[in-house]
Each structure stands twice: as C-alpha cells, then as structure tokens.
Image (cartoon, rainbow, N blue to C red):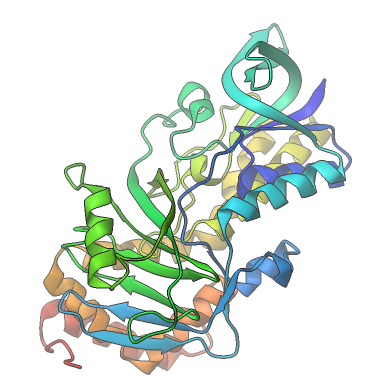
Length: 392
C-alpha cells in the first residue's frame, strides 16, 4: 500500500516523489528505463535554488543568448549578473530519480498500463521491465507525470486526451571548437520559417556536446530534415552525431489537472511548458511540487477536493507569465516578417533586461513601470509596421 504512486520519473515526477517522501509519505516512482526527452537543457538559477541543484549537475554555464532572424541578422543579449545553467537530460533525470530513491521512494522500472478500482481501493497496473509481467500496486493517490501524451491523463482526467502540443526533435552532437558561428557559452535561438514555421530552432551548448533542434505544430514539416538544414546553415553538419531524440511538447496548461477522486497530473502531462520560449524543466519541477502539496493536503484532510490545489497554486504564481508569453508567440511567430520584427525588438535594452529578469526570477518585474510602458509602445509600433526592422 502506497500513499502516492507517481507515474513518470522525469523532473516533475521525481520532484513530486522527493517532496512526498520528505514529508513522511510512502511513495512509489515508476519510470521507463532508457527514456531521454529531447530538451535544450536550460535551467535558471531560480531552479537551482528552489530545488537544491548544485553546479555539479551543469554541463555548461551560458552568459549570452543570440537571437537570429530569418534574414540571418542577430542580436546578442548578455545575461547580466548571472548565468543560465545547462543540463543534459541523459544525466539530469537519473540524478533526480536516484535522489528521490535515496530519500525513501520505491523506484520501479516498467510501463504504466492502467488504473483499476475495487470499491474504494485504487490499484496501478504496470508492466515490469525485468520480467515483462504485469504487477499491481495499491495506492491512495496517483500522480500522472508521464508526459504530454499522458496515458494517465487520457484515461482519468477530463480533457486530458485533448492537450495541444508541438513536436520537438533534436540531435546531440559532438561540440566543435569556438568559432564565429559556435560559442560554448552562448545559446542560439533561430527564428526562421524555413526551420520552423511556427516555433524556433536552437543550438545550445552542453560542454563537450551540443543540442541542435527545433519544434513545430505543423504535421507536414519533416523535423529531421529541418534539423539537418539548421546544422548545415550553422556549419555543424560535419560534427559527429551522438544521439537523436524526439517527443511532443505541450502548448498550454490543461483546464483541469485532477479527476476529483484519486488522480492529479503534473509537468508536461498537465501542459506546463512556457509558451514562446518552450521552457519546461523549471515549470515541470514546480508542477511536481504543487502536485505533491495537493496530495499531502488531500491525504491529511481526507478531502479529494484538495487535489485542485495543484493547479490553483501553479496558476496563482505563473498564470500571468504564461499569458504574456502566449500573446508574444501568437503575435510574432506567425510569419517571417513578424519574426524579423521580433528580433528587432530584442535590440532594445529594456526588453533585454526585463526579459532576463523575468527568466531568472520567474515572475514579471513590476519595479520599472516606465520600462514596461516603453516596451508596450515599441511592441505596438513593430506589430503595426510603423517602424522598420532594425538592420544589423
């Protein structure tokens, strides 16, 4: 008998499991062996502070972001008074799972099959990897942290089968030496309809390796071909390819995260990836934490209504950031002409400072109202075409 059975051992599930065992609960953590999610791997210092992640988990520290337009123009944005940490999910996810297990979570390796109920009793059925046999574990509550195409969400939570997503694909390559086109302490973000008609491409350093990829919601786009074109344009075609990975990335948080009985969703399964940027690791871990908080509250009170705390706590803190980023994506990612203007807007020093203040601290900064007003006016001018894109 478990208090909580967590399905999915990525950053969200592993965080939920760790928080729950640290609060005295009996927890199972089920994960598929060998799963590596395609991810640029960027994490802000706020994540490292909130979730006790040390420098030893970083493969690189980035101090500059380069925004590249469809015509090849670029603007380099320095990261003032800090850095963006880079992790490799191949190593980061196992670290998080091992930490949860060391704290007391029961680590299980296998594939989630279904949830069965007998009266008031709840069971998670999973196929054990080692034997190939189905196992059944009794639990009071279930956290579904099994990704954008969550089997738990589709089966148990209203709307869980309708989550919109982009398909992301990347290739981990052996990193070249520093050059005019590649810098081991710089993230490149490519806004070009030839690479992605509705999202962006990226080149992110990972120390001895680099992540090169893109995402799109357009089903007709060949992700591998687009990534090959990105590598060729960046002069990275000759670099050794170490591995290739693809997965869906959700586009917006679900309207409901629980089933009103015994299941709550977390991370990608709940849709918590930031619009525009596609940032997911920090929000996944926050999603795991609020899911754990909701489960602990429900176990203590006996009220299944407390499972709703997961979504309400998350949205109270992050709804406005998601709304602003969603508006930005809808406004600027629809055409190359708009992308050109977006990169022009990134030249503005107020945009740069407020963007990274919001990224590093994970909230909209209200201390500089005049800067917000100036950005709003410049944004309107670019969208209306009153100003021409900056030429550099």
